[in-house]
Every structure is written in C-alpha cells, then in structure tokens.
Length: 468
Image (cartoon, rainbow, N blue to C red; front, side, top):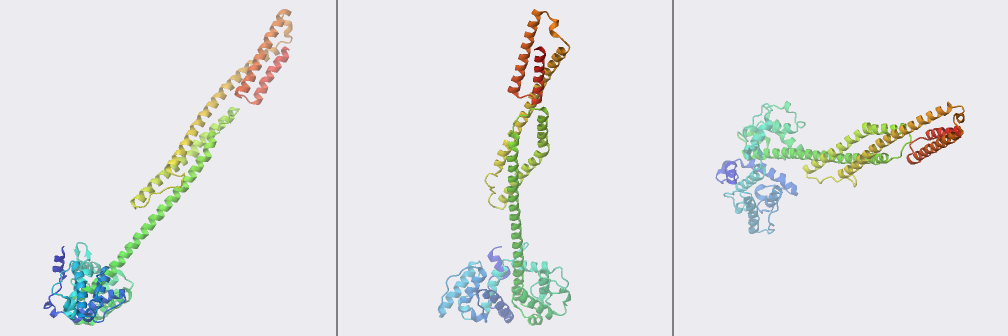
C-alpha cells in the first residue's frame, strides 16, 4: 500500500480544522500529552501544555528524534518568531520525508499555539511512528492493531472488540490485554462487566506501575461519554501493542541467544570430543606399531604359535573398536564443520598433528606394519615347520644308526682285516659329514632349540665312540 493510500485510509493526512471542531479536544489533549511525555522522558524532559510547549519547535524536534532514532537538522536557538518558525518547519519537513502528507498544517499555526493544528500534527506523528508499522497477518496500521486486539482478547468472556471507541468503555478489553500477557498482574475472574470504572482504573494503574505505560486516559471521561474518542483510545492501545510486542521480541531474542549459546556449547563439546578421541587414537597407534614391528625370531614352534594367537586376538578384539573410533572421529569432524558453516562460523582447525589427514596417515602406517607382521609370522612358522621336518629326519636316521650299532656286539669280527679298515673309514667320513651338517644348520638358521642340538650331537658322539 502506498503512502497516499495509508494517509487516505488511516488519517495520515492532517485533518482540516473545520472537521476537528466537534472533537473532544480536552479528552484527546490529555492523551496526546501523556503519549509525548512517555517518549520525551527518555531524553530527560517533558511538556506541560501541548499547545504552548511545542511553539518554539525545540521539544517537537527532540520528540521526533527520540521516536525515530534519527538526528534532525540543527535547531535555531534564538527566541524570535522567525527562529521558532524555522524549527517547526524543520520538524514538519522531517515528518513529510517519512511519506506523510501534511494538509492545512503550517509552522505559523503551531508557533501561534493553535491547539487544533497542534493536536492534528501530533496525531499525524502517532499514526506514522506508533500505528502505521503495526502489522498482523495480512493487515496493517489501524486494521492490524484492531486485529491484534481481537486475537488477544478472543478467549475472554464479555469482551468483544469491534472498534476503538465503545468496545473499550467497560474496561474489560484493557484488563484482558494485560491478563493475556501478564496474568499474574490482574485477577480477571473477579472483574465485573457492570463496574466499568473499577475495571478501567485497575487497567490504567497496573499498566502504569508494571508495564511502564503512562496513564493517558481518564476512566470517568470514558464512562461519562457515549462514544470515547477513537484517536485517544488508539493511541493508548498502541502503547500496549508496543509494550507487549517489545517484550515478545525481547523474549524471542533471548531465546535466540540461548539457542546460539547452546549451539556454541554443543560445538565446543564436539571440538573437545574430537581432540580427545584423536589424541587417544593416535596414542594407541603409537603404542601398537612398535609391537607389530618387533620381528625377533623364536626358536620353537610353540613360541611362534603364541605370537600368532596374540596377533589374532589383536585383530579380533583390539582393532575393531579402534576402527569404530576412527569412523566416529571422521563423522564428528564432518558434522562439526557442517554446523559451523551453516551458522556462518569459522571452520574448526584441530591441534597440530591431529588433523583427519594426520590420523589417516598414522592409520596407514599401522596397517602397513600389521601386514608386514602377518607376513613375517607366517614365513617364520613355515620355516620352523621345514626345519622341524629336517630335524625329525635326522633324528630318525640317527636312531636307525644307533639301533644297528647296538645290535652288533663285535662289529670288527664280522669283517676280514682288509675290509674292516675300509668300512671304518667310510663310517667315520659319514659321521663327520653329519656333524658338520648339523653345525651349519644350527649356526646359519638357528632352527633348533639347544636341547635338540645337544641331543643330536649326542647321537653323533655316541656313534663315533662306538665305531672308534
């Protein structure tokens, strides 16, 4: 809706003086004065007489600065009429710059103290800065304010807000607005529709004491008139709207801040969890790799089988939880980065050496060491199996030799003298070759335990003695 439409529908164009003749000027003057003071007190000042205190334009300019939050042109400090007209014109120019058409209102009338023109100007300011920006669902300004009142008071008995005059005469509408937002301030169940004076005074007193809404209306004037002044009622009701919507905005902002703080705390917890999980995982990898790189050979099959069993326990029991930790670490990291990006926060940078890439590199070294250790274990077991097989063959041959020599009481008597010397020579040669083979195997491969070597060497020695 354009500015012209707003002015035409809701009175943003200042009223013609002739139209304002029949208005309840005293009723409206009291309300407008209270409304102006509710803002001027923020600047440490106030007005006593609305038609007199705005004549020099100084407090009028100050009022506009307070309610708009903007700075106006520097005012004239002189006391002459020309200075006053200049200040009022600066105020009127500022109002016009906000899209408000000022009809029949001139600086001279304000400087001369024309109460009708002054009230018309203040009503224009109220409409522009207190009512025009009200928006409820698809409605705005006056209709928006009326719809807001209807929505808030709908659940209350004996309240039917249809306008900004007679719907408020019994005071229940004001009390319902207060009770809807601050139920602890009014015991609505004790209010009676047939006691409007008590209802109005209760609402006005509570609003002034607890809601910081100054008393702008007189209860007796409202009860004593057939149709309360619409502009005065709208002005006062708009103060309730801004008070409660401001509180709601503050609550919304507080909730938003709480959510932001909660998200920040959650993000910080994710960062701490990542750092701890990364440190623990890297420490486990650091301890495990040396164990996998220890390739000290064992001399017995039993010892190597135990190492193989320990390695299987590592793969079955110890490594799987660490695989899960590594996956969870990457999930936490990606989740955290996504949350930070969506909230326009800087990306998370882990401590030095704890990046995901660092963990992946360390994990790669672990798996490389694991693969090498497994290959070494299997090769060692196969080597010991081969050497055990060789040792068993040697033992069998030695046993056969011992059995054969033990079965001959006098080997020398079985051979002629010339043949005996040749047989002894061949046997000694075989014994020396077997002993040499045993020694070479022991030194080169360390394939047998000490007791096996002594046993086999004993076999060779006993055979040599028997033949010697």
